[in-house]
Length: 283
Image (tube, rainbow, N blue to C red; front, side):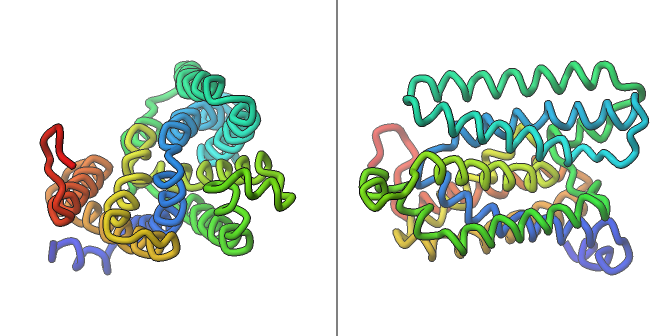
C-alpha cells in the first residue's frame, strides 16, 4: 500500500484515477441509496448493460468514420439516458412490461455494442476495459466529464429531494399532492443512468450494479434515515474505490475486480456485525 501512495505523487494517471473514483463514489452513494431502498437494482443493471451500445457506436464513429471529437463516454451517456426514458415510460404501464423492457435493454444494448465493435478497426483494448473496469485508463477529458456528471446528479437531488423521495416511496400521496409521479420516476432513472456512466470507468459495465448496490446495502443495516444512509454510503464507496485502486496497483491486479471484492467483503462484514446469519434460513 505504501508503494501506491508514493507513486501517487509521481504519476498523473494515478491521480486521475483517484479523483475519478472519489467523484464517482459521491454519486454512487446517493443514487445507490435510492436504488437499494426502492429495489430497482434490476433496472439499474439494464441501464448499465445498455451503455455498451452507445460506447460501441461512439468507438465506431471515432475509429471507422474519423469523428475525432466523439468519446466513448458520450455514447454511454446517450444510450443510458435513452434507456432511462424508455424504462420510465414502460414502468408507468405495469410491472410485467417493465421487466420485459429491462431484459430487452440489457440484451439489445450489449448486442448493438458488440456489432459496432466488430465493425471498428484495430484492437479494442479500451472497450474491453470498459466491460471489466480499469480506472487507471481515465483520461483528462473523461475525468472532466465525470466530475460534471457528479455535480449534475448531486445538484438535481439537492434541488428536488422532497419530490424524488415522495414519488419513490409514497406514489399515491405524491399524486394527491399534484406531482407527476411518472415524470419524477423517469428523472430518478435518468440520475441512476448518469451514475452508472460515472461508474463504468471504476468497475466496468459487467460489475457496476454491484458497486451501486453494495455500499448502500451495507450502511442500510445500521440506519433507516435516508440522508444519513446517502452520506455514509458515499464515504464507504470512496473507501472502497480508493482501497481497490491501491490494492490493484500494489499487487498488479485488475482494478475493477479488486474493487468489487472489497465491496463484497465489507457487505459480508456488515451482515456479521448486524447479527445476520449467512446460511439460508437466517433472520
